[in-house]
Image (cartoon, rainbow, N blue to C red; front, side, top):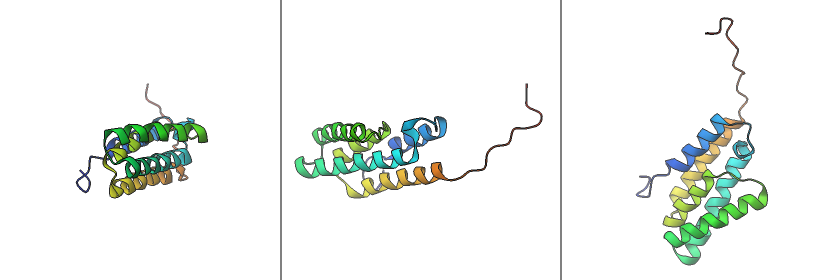
Length: 124
């Protein structure tokens, strides 16, 4: 629980796993991760504000976030889970926590890490 709201780890954990395991895919590009979560959270907060938080807002927010991601060419499936969580609660602090997590993943993925050097004696 974060600030009395549902756990926010699943969408961020899924984003981190995708970036770590498949960094060359379009969905794992750093800006795609950040912008997709931003679109999802914005759609969810707007939906929760207009119709009230709950399961209907979560469903509408997920649909709006997927539509926005597809329209911008920045599709990142874990961000749809962010839309569901924030649409269900309408809470700002968890929304900011999700965006902070996405920003952290983006910064780590975009950082110039040294290339791993192959060992001279690879294991059989």
